[in-house]
Image (cartoon, rainbow, N blue to C red; front, side, top):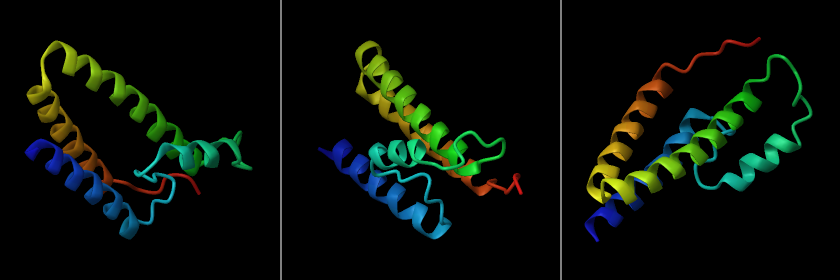
Length: 104
């Protein structure tokens, strides 16, 4: 129960952290909005489209993370899976601090 409580707190913190950063492309709460926004993006095929790039990376990492988590849970157990999850969340936090505008 303690692990579930920590994961729930982490999920809530993840959603709340995107609001002040104004990164609407990464909803963190559900992938459906990102899929819909990706498909209806009027600049989907543009060379420099930061919103599209963020959505694609968000969805790809969500899918990859699901498979990696399932594999780890089956092979090494839940404790190591939670440690990896914490490490990846820490890495994402640091990369968000380095987020800069490249496209103009």
